[in-house]
Image (cartoon, rainbow, N blue to C red; front, side):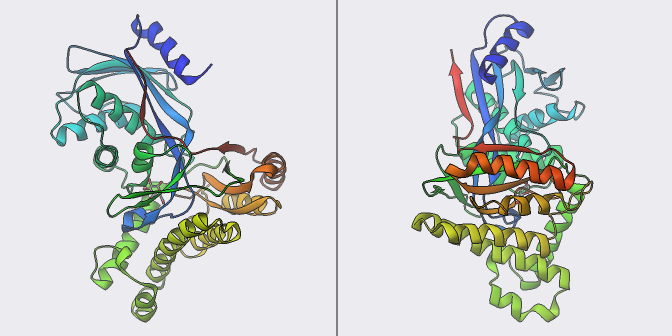
Amino acid sequence: MSLETTVREAFKEHFGGDPTLIVSAPGRVNLIGEHTDYNDGFVMPMAIDRAVWIALRPRSDAYMLVYSLDYGGHAEMSLTEMTHRHSEWAEYMKGVAWAMQEAGYALHGWEGVVTGDVPRGAGLSSSAAIELATARALAHLSGIEWNPAKMALICQKAENQWVGVNSGIMDQMISAAGEAGSALLIDCRTLETTPAPLPAGLAVVILDTMTRRGLVDSKYNERRAECERAAAHFGVKALRDVTLEQLEAAKAQLEPVVYRRARHVITENARTLDALDAMRAGDVPRLGALLNASHESLRDDFEVTHAEDKPDALDMMVQCARAHSGCIGARMTGGGFGGCAVAVVRAEAVESFTQQVSADYENKTGLAPALYVTTPQAGARIVYQE
Ligand code: GLA
């Protein structure tokens, strides 16, 4: 059964009658440009065919009444008295309602059912997906024009200030603005997007190590703070504004760890822009080399490839992927500290790739991984309206 049917049927069961609106918003995988978004840099994610779905109907009062199929729980949220008191999934929705009201929008109440198939804690942005699905629903019901970049910023504010995770703009931006058939190069300073289509004959495979983030948020914030220290040293707003030459010239004055963090960000921005050129030129070996170099930089300079529970799982997954002859390049993806890797693979080799890599990884780590072949999807959308 498709998730559209599941969510429609569940709506009937829980609320009686038919939903008047069904929305969905995707998770994402990032091809290259990691830990650059909060440095005003460049990222190249694509929206994936795993998403959050909401089936709903407006209410005449100022409440959101939501049933989560995945958590088996109800939340009754007032749009007029916003307080933190629900389980985690509901706080994402409430945070979006809060941030939209902070932005000056008057919101309409609704009741609905939410479900999804973006794995949680895997680095595929299940939280951005729930935020953007909520925003899409609220905007439609409340007569608010859908502007993807504006809504992405509102959802990022919900995540930063309501949920309390200090993430950058990438995840919300791609879940809002994704394009079918193409990854997007996003300039995280201007929020300008440029389609980045994969050269013909290549496929994207997500490789879930099945390790989950531990104390990530504190480590993520620690990395951000190190980047901010580096930018402050140069007296600029963000590391986007520092060149490699400037960094090398200042090496002796910087703490070694801050120097290495900055070197990752500066070289990763360059690799991301180079990757767009390589894709446009159909230069597949160059693209692969850039993906591989991104992983090495995240491992050695940024130090985010080790998971708490199984320190070498992510590096091992990348090694297993690269060992297959059909693999063009492979790297960790998302925030790191466990979660997923991504590989670009020759399309005709995908089946043998997934079989070999699954078996190899399981042999080496004792963990059964999950591998998904995915294609670029559109961002948050209205699937059905009465
Ligand atoms: C997480 C954050 C993003 C981004 C990535 C790393 O996914 O939510 O904003 O910083 O980590 O690239």
